Length: 88
Image (cartoon, rainbow, N blue to C red; front, side, top):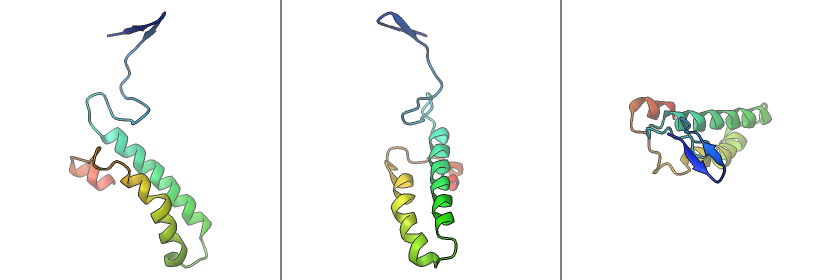
């Protein structure tokens, strides 16, 4: 199915880039994207505080920069399978 907008044609895609949810409304693509971004942020924070006490610097930075990324809109994209829950 294609859509015509003004003088152009839009072709369907398998997922959208704004929220990465697949067309069949399954969430693994979205969850994998969130986990990937959270892992990158956690590694960046860890590299900044290599020689410091982890409880003083890393944990608060993790709560500020990684936690909200994982928790944002979690009620909307709540994982429904055990695999998705384990991934998070």
